Length: 355
Image (cartoon, rainbow, N blue to C red; front, side):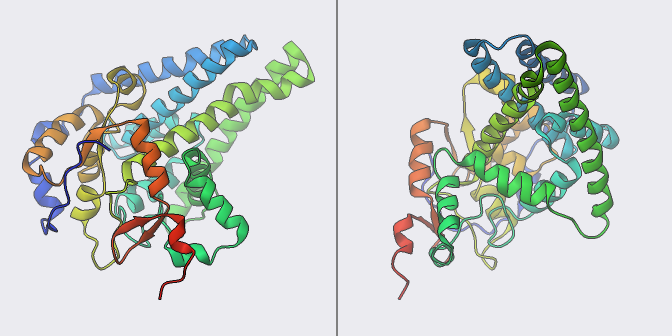
């Protein structure tokens, strides 16, 4: 990334000290802003989906798929905000909004709340706790079988973020995972409700296809309307999470060295992207440091909170412009991790056992 601060001496501040400097106005939720964003995201999703329903011309279908995938991501980002309780004032309304906005991306809100809100945010970049893009050590990589090594090389390549997110986050930590304790029933209810909604949507699309185009269309229409946009979303959101927490200068922390301050302040980023793209689909999610400092801050207040944090911690906050060049450099450099030295390593580090 560009404009990254030079390494600084380890800070011992608490995260509460950072929260104390965030202006009170940054916690003010706006029903109007939330409504406008939700309507916008819904329209941006419906337009390409409806258009896809009535065309099979490839030079229309391809861009419509891209817009549909981005729209699913836009809805998901707002659902993610609501899942944190940050979108509107009502707790119950936030949960309903989160469930609805996450439905096109086939995400179980109760499971997402546990995995993302509690674990990822609670233990960001802590060894053995934060499961999102958790790196392997050279020793761990050497112990993998041939297929697992090939899988790792794909998922940590420049084209692999979607495959990683689909397997590790969406499948392993949400759909396949059975939470113990009091969360189990809520997750089962959400899985059941979402499964019924997905079956109805896919069945309706298949029925429309069968009535208008026969057997082939009965399979093609659900794939065209829902499956391909979902797969594009998975890649978009996987890449988004990756650039938030993986870079040559971003540390992952051994358990004894980790703190909330280090995880949320020193291992997250603020990345600038084109304003129109941010406004249409990403809703300030790339202003990621304040979101990790306090997930209660609504999306439209993140820039103001980021400015306040950067003013007080100018040598800690990582900020830069999101570029393809930096992303490709990161995917080449960040393959394995040495937790003792606090540095990323290439695959070559695993070829020779440590002395």
